[in-house]
Image (cartoon, rainbow, N blue to C red; front, side):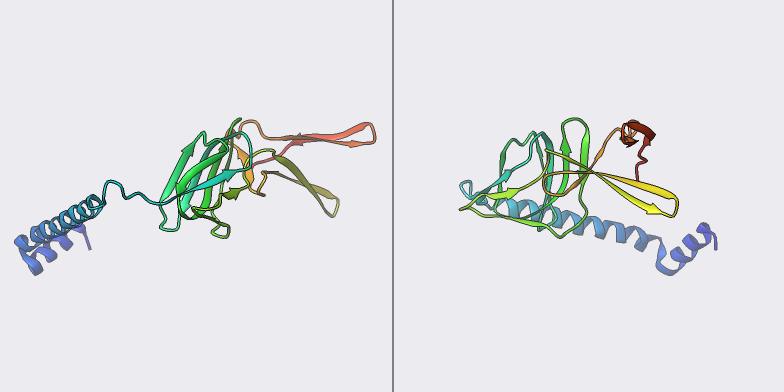
Length: 184
């Protein structure tokens, strides 16, 4: 059925006036919700602040950290240093950017970090990085896998994929193969 026929059937069933009336009703409800949220936030006392805790970052060369709270709000910290102040609560590490163009994006919900008022929480993330090469044999083929791992076991990739990591295979002092790793 064409779009025009569906519109004509809709207008015949509900009439022109009701079609536009729904849009106005929706906008009224949306306006009330937005104003309600604004006034709820405005009712906080000026001295009423969320309790703060400290999150220590054990790794080095961290350019940016993105954390996600339990309520799914994300907080981004640029050049965080060795520790950051955050509202008390539970957090997931979602993204880390390191100096030199290395990035880590984490989709798992497994490793929550709980930040309290009394004692600093610790998050192991960033450099030093460890290069891991895994070799597996499949018949006459030797497959090499490459991973760049951070302090907390997180995996990094280079933002610039035009320069993939390289490898060279030696048998004693004799070079027998070399190449580059493919991303993905």
